[in-house]
Length: 379
Image (cartoon, rainbow, N blue to C red):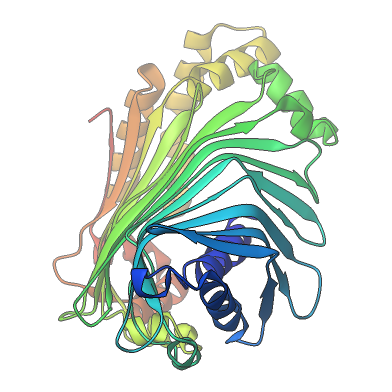
């Protein structure tokens, strides 16, 4: 849902809105609006129309903006778009200090997405020729959308999202070097689970009766000189449940392959430099232990003792005694005082993905040694 929203409603909106707000052309708002239509149509996948365009000082205002996919289905409408502080580019297209696109609506075959406020900072819009050539550039430095509502499709009830923010930085040649994504307060109402009796029964037993509030964050960077992709964090934080945070570094990742049709070839050159997965408990563990205790007619301490005692035997299937000992020690400590669990892989030197996959199939019990895996609790 969200990747599609980001790609069409944000990317298409950006291409469709940002083109046209330079002071040099401010006297001819229609020319600016027509340039927007040309930019949107450059890929041949979308088209745009508008009702009116006017200029006042450094602002260009476009009303009645509509963008549709040429094959039908997806439609986006924005009552008013305001473009501020724009200037023409030598290669064509425009830069703009700021653009706003409030009260928008996007409909697909399945979903409807609306938002209350939207803005772009430091926007760069390429010419239609650059769009066709897939030229490297930074489309904007910051995107902010707030008051988002998603409904329809497989959703039994609408989702409200407080805000979505994206920040991008690039090298001088337009190569991406840093990115940040924040999705704040995704409110998942209990009605979403109403059509899943088994899921609902488990949630009821755990005491989750009022839905969930989820925050998602992604931040990372790319070093062109070493073809290294760094994931600083990929975080899913759910109130009263817990926070999952993944970070890592991967070398040998060709950016040209990553953003092209050759993405499946990345595994042939990519290497794992390091990976960390951490879970911080915010209530789910205690609820699960209490649920199990109620089913057994026992206390939480009894359940903790039973699971902790069984862990060493349950882990025999791993076939790697040093790792089994680490997991058992960390698991027992976490059950007694459920704060956090961290799994890390820190090999002495980067390990090719191909070697990881072949080892996993031929000798999986040696994989923890190859990757230097560690498991700790409450650190």
